[in-house]
Image 1: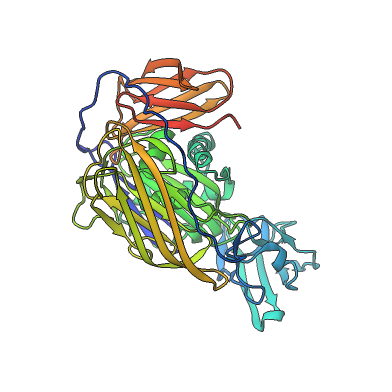
Image 2 (image 1 turned 120 degrees about the vertical axis):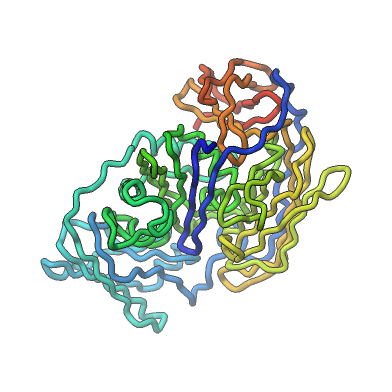
Length: 506
């Protein structure tokens, strides 16, 4: 029996989808166990080399190279807030010295030249001042012997959808609770991305999930707004084609925390959501036999990036011992529906590509057999890698991850990157999601990892500095609310020791 069916994710590089069905059950204690003894939380052991991986220049291209993202002609239902070009791997301080030019001609004539604005997301342009029925944009970079690039935007009258803004914002609150644990910036709500997501959720409800796929639309079908996610994002006003999409098919509504946990417990979708270059998102949803939650994602290339983004993160406790593989493309060929250990992912945001990857997992007793998903394979980008343990992990056990690879950075430099860190499992296959629903309210949701089946009547306790400050149980939807006053980080733990750290109040 299916509780909810498919989730899916896509970036401009690759498409991915994930399916969730009823899965296996791991027995666990009926009472809340003691939290795992705290162990040292080591820093990522990254061997840095050269100025290209310092705090001031994380893998940017050299000053004599640029990588503009230039869209082709497209139609739009809502004008972009910026006439702009986005760049990948180009430092804003360098772009400001490159004598770039953007000229705009509308149906009312050519707009006067304005001083370009250099945004932190590597967007370069200036704000749209007034609506127009059509726009032609020309980008010039004469210093680089690059011919001018031009594209047109044709405006089309269409009634705009009404995205569920409160639901979408709660999704981002949950996602940002995870991202704070990784030291990443918070994701902001973006209305154009929400419009695109809502329109696509409506298309799926009208036409089904295979018309022709979860992420693609057919121009001959009702509700068409763009073939690919980035087409739809441009059409509803996102200023760049550097965008992506994740989502979940459902036949009944799910709380935002459960949607987010289901996505983060995967391999490919997690990497999209934990990208340090992700900085905006918007959500849409539809109800019915072909209902869905769709989350459209807007990316940039930020000015400060870490050597790597890994998950489980260094020192993480209470990690699920098992994960039910219901993801497509399948990171475990031939293993769809089977249960494995919890996946480990690595993203090196400043690298152009990785090679000669070695990724291992071990505990104090022995190495763990794993399946490594290599950079560029299936739905991974060339600077990402992952591994899935072939067996369910041991409960209450500290594991060591070792990663090494030859990294080629955006500016052409290369060298061996080595990372090592530890995480610890809880006692069951549970994922615990905790976030602050209000300044003094903590919401907790507990579900089986990989299939999203909620855990009702699950005992929960909340600890601060090793002392229990709140205790309760989840309701029939696997959720509990707690009043927690005061600041400081919290440890939220379920029966069996699975849990999630909740960072201090922002």
